[in-house]
Image 1 (cartoon, rainbow, N blue to C red):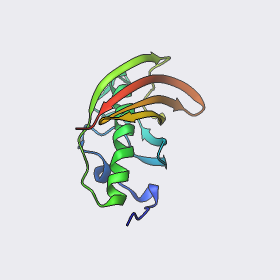
Image 2 (cartoon, rainbow, N blue to C red):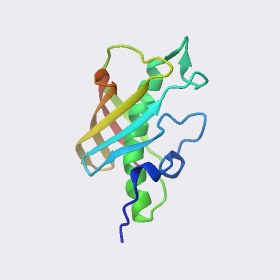
Image 3 (tube, helix red, strand yellow):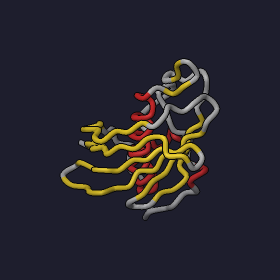
Length: 142
């Protein structure tokens, strides 16, 4: 039986295979079969922060961890263990600006297709209402 949990009560440690200091989401803000959103406050001591800005690799990893959070939450409510996935490809990456320490990222992924253990998503990262990064990602779940 699937038991839904309040999104704000779910720790990233319960739905992600990553562990500190490599975690780039603070929690889920939306979840359904095709769309998932997360929030992340950029802190000055984070591994992917340099010169008061989150590095582009941090933005990509934040998008990927939002994908992982979607699957991890599904597994959690289904009583299954967290699975490890891999970034298969990043296409059409557009970074309009790098976010700064103290800003909160609102990241949304929209599932376009799932087939043979691969998930194709469109990802969008916002700070407030400003879109700062977009990409298409392929995530492999063995």
